[in-house]
Amino acid sequence: MDFERLLNVAGPTEGHVIRPSDCKEPLRVGFINCVGSRDIKTNEYCSGGVCCMFNIKNAILLKEKRPEISCYIFYIDIRTPFRGYEEFYNYARELGIRFIRGRPAEAIETEDGNLVIRAEDTLKGVVRTIEVDLAVLGTGIVPHPDIEKLSKMLKIPRAADGLFMESHPKLGPIDTELDGVFVAGGASGPKDIPFAVAQGSGAAARAARLLVRGKVKIEGVTAVSDE
Image 1: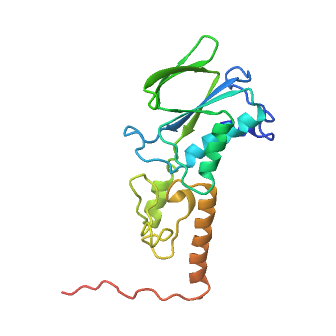
Image 2 (image 1 turned 45 degrees about the vertical axis):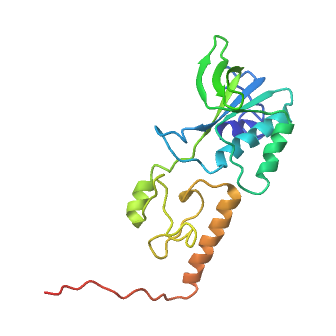
Image 3 (image 1 turned 60 degrees about the vertical axis):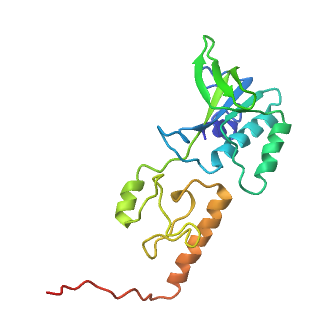
């Protein structure tokens, strides 16, 4: 998100991408996917193709703005699950963005402030060392710190990734275990904007279905003591 802010003409640098350390404009930029995710030490889950596309999008925006810049994307797997995503990925390759399949093992800072990234290229079976002027981290999506407090308040269970659990992944993707409470967007898992908008519309429709009745009959079962 910080890098996307630099690309924006309304951002602090008026669209000029610079290094935060010395404000120099980079000529080689490395994008690292899956930072803080798909790792048993941090988060085991994948962010559902969201992070892959964010990094690809930012690399394309940078390449279109400054074609002379060399862009490298280090990845484990490229997830392009939705409509137009695969075409977007192919367009990035056509622009000259280089994809390296391999998680970087280390990044060493040089005397002039550059970073030397060492990663195994699993497709070619070699260890590559690439020096870049700027490294952009594609971080995994994690729950908000207040989600535990909200979960206890509403009595909604959470999944293994810490996000809210729906009542059924297929038959009730926006319903929860608590009647009248619905989830949408990133609250129940990493999602892109169109998917989040669709879920938000569905949640609003489910809520409206209850509101238009005026009164709703609830289950009348109550606990009694049988001595």
